[in-house]
Amino acid sequence: MIDLFESKITGTQVAYYIVCKRKLWLFSHHIEMESFSDSVLIGKLISEESFKREKFKEISIGDTLKIDFLKVDNEIIVHEVKKSKKLEESHIWQVKYYIYRLKNLGLNCFRGVIHYPKIFKKLNVEYEETDTIKIEQALLKIKEIINQEKPPEVINKPYCRKCAYFELCYI
Image 1 (tube, rainbow, N blue to C red):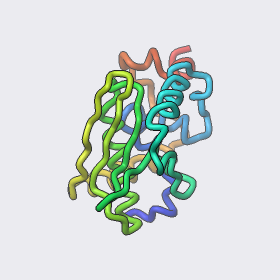
Image 2: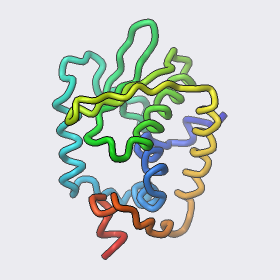
Image 3: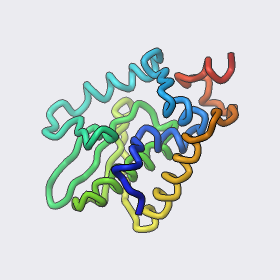
Image 4: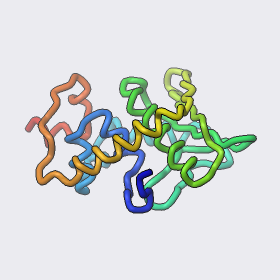
């Protein structure tokens, strides 16, 4: 098991690992371009304006995790709000990482839900035991990327054009 208190890896870093290793490296070296992105701002507004009645909203765990909201019944269910389904795989692994962290704290958590309010859709996420191995392997690779002297190469994907880091890669 990875020492979670030593790792300091955020859910955002896990999502960036799935989307773009270069973005992960830049973000992890405190080059944070999100505050200049209209797309990121819209996503934050959607998250803030959705589910206002939820009791456990914007839950922080330590200084590395910030979960949009939790539902607590017989178990804890992680809920994340996203603007678009375009990077859905990264959303799934971000939620699974939150579940992984909560489970490692001894909490009863095996499920999550990703909400896409703009299109009135949601995706249920089930945590499977094999996810633990995948997450721990990803955490080791994330640490390797962060510790590189220089950022990884540009990936040239269609979604790069809307990325907050676009100028740092293409100009």
